[in-house]
Structure formats: C-alpha cells, structure tokens
Length: 214
Ligand SMILES: CC(C)(COP(=O)(O)OP(=O)(O)OC[C@H]1O[C@@H](n2cnc3c(N)ncnc32)[C@H](O)[C@@H]1OP(=O)(O)O)[C@@H](O)C(=O)NCCC(=O)NCCS
Image (cartoon, rainbow, N blue to C red; front, side, top):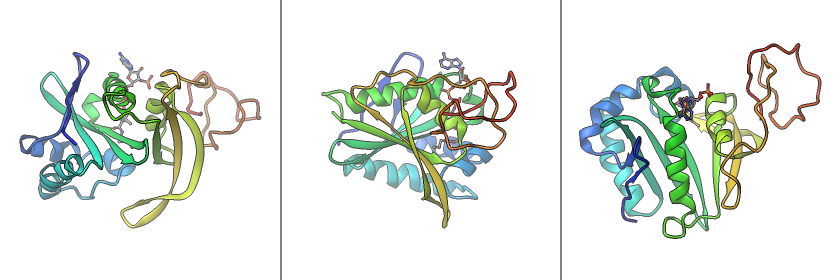
C-alpha cells in the first residue's frame, strides 16, 4: 500500500519519519497515553526509533496498517492509525500529546482518516471499529462525536502490558451519518456505568456537570 497524506488545511496526516523520533519520544512520556494505550512503559528513544523506522513502514508496505502522524503548524502533535481487518473493515486508534488536546485536532484527524477509510478511491471499507480500555471517556467522546455507535463492553477484551483489561467497542458503518447518534447526557456518573444502559434508568442525583455516557 502506498503511503497517503491527508489534509484539511488545519491538520495534516502524514506517515511519521525518522525526523519525528524525538517528538514521539517526548509525547509518549505523557501519563494518559501510557494509561490508555499499549505503548511501552517506560517509553524510550529506541521504542520511538523502532515504531517509526520499522512498524510504520512495514504496516504500509504490507497493507496491514495505515499510520499517520498528526501535524499542525508544522509540529507533530499526535498519531492516528487504521489497522485493517479484511474484508472491508478496520480498527481506528489515536492519541494526542497533552498540549494538543481540547482543540478539535483529533476530531479533524478522525474525519480525515474516516474519509479515506470509506472513500471508493481510498480504502473503500464498509465499517470501522473503535475500541478503548473501559473508562476512557475522552476516547469514547471523540468516537461518539463522529457518529460511532457504542456496542458493548468486552470483558477482558484487551491486553495492556501483559494484563488483560476490559474494553469498550463501537462501530461506524459507511452509510452512518458522521454525527452523534444519541445526545451526550447532562447527568454526572461517578463510576462508569455500562454505556448501553437506557438513559431512563435511575442514576445518581443529577448535577449540572456534563458527564460521559453513550
Ligand atoms: C483521546 C484523545 C485523543 C481525545 O483528545 P481531544 O482533545 O479530547 O479530542 P479533540 O482534539 O477532538 O478535541 C475535542 C475537544 O476540543 C473541543 N474543540 C475545540 N474546538 C473544536 C473544534 N473546532 N472542533 C471540535 N472540537 C473542538 C471540543 O469541544 C472537545 O472538547 P469537549 O470534549 O470538552 O467538548 C486524547 O484525550 C488522548 O490522546 N488521550 C490519551 C490517549 C488515548 O486515550 N488515546 C485513545 C486510546 S483508545
């Protein structure tokens, strides 16, 4: 598969290069990236060299994985990828460095990657799957915002550094609208409830704080 570069004028998605090794090393020191992804911990410069120099190139070359660095104003601020699950499916994954969060940059990147995923002259996929470790509301919010439907909690569905952990899973089909399928509820939920619970079920005392749920 030939590497592809995508841009919407604000973010550019391009495969990371050896010039990005230092930036990747620095960004992957972030505790939230360690907590919610499978990057090695502690994360060292050789980890970034292997990722950029071997994993990314092999993924494109073998048609298994499209990995893009997320750039804005010329700086690498995160990573987004599609792991292909033939036929016609892929799993999306992403992270942003802490300075880049809360600005809609992942939202833009996700739209670009999904556009390429479903385009007949792109990957021409039928569906994209999203998974995160259970409790990662920031990840679910990003997926929810572009139209993913929450499907399930997969007990022990993932493995992080040798330990089995629960996962949340959702899907986006080619024909789905790229906007939230359900409103984001205005009640706070102190501990994550199964996001598939109907919104009418009794919960804790409502507060004005926006809380996460499917
Ligand atoms: C998951 C993660 C990438 C989400 O990052 P994010 O900054 O929340 O996502 P976005 O860049 O799309 O920004 C969205 C936020 O920016 C705000 N925003 C500002 N301008 C915006 C714009 N023009 N368009 C969209 N959103 C905008 C939104 O309101 C939203 O904030 P809100 O959720 O409080 O409403 C980030 O939290 C992260 O990297 N976490 C650690 C690694 C991780 O968990 N990865 C996922 C593993 S499954």
